[in-house]
Length: 155
Image (cartoon, rainbow, N blue to C red; front, side, top):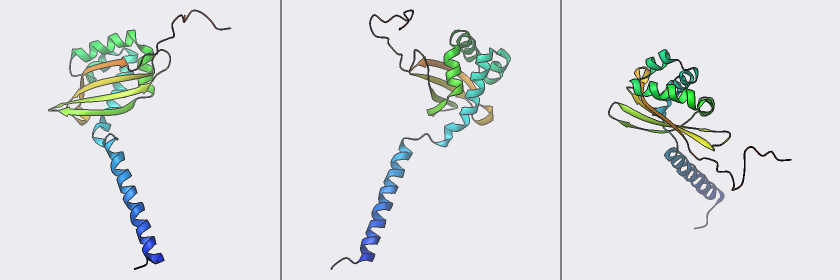
């Protein structure tokens, strides 16, 4: 039975719809669900308080002294990294275990690091979520070539 123009059009529409459905399903696998999005605003607030070394704000946002201590030390030690994180914070992923939620963030960096990674452990959910632990690290340090000196200027 030969295919007429209506049949070929219907087959093309079905193929395009199937390809779109498969692409949509594959994209959903690699995207962060909306369940971790509410943690972005508290992360920004925590980073702003860290940069300002505002111990009162940090105490309000934290679930205990460990997060406050980390923030105050990081605020003194890593202001450039914290500014990069606060300015370009990207929600990576997260995981929940009981009342705790660990959320991974990242940010591109300038200078000696290709990117920053920030891990925050929240206790509670929603507006009542507080930060119990925090850590940040250079995801990929830039290693200068052998013999390169930062004090030597190119001419």
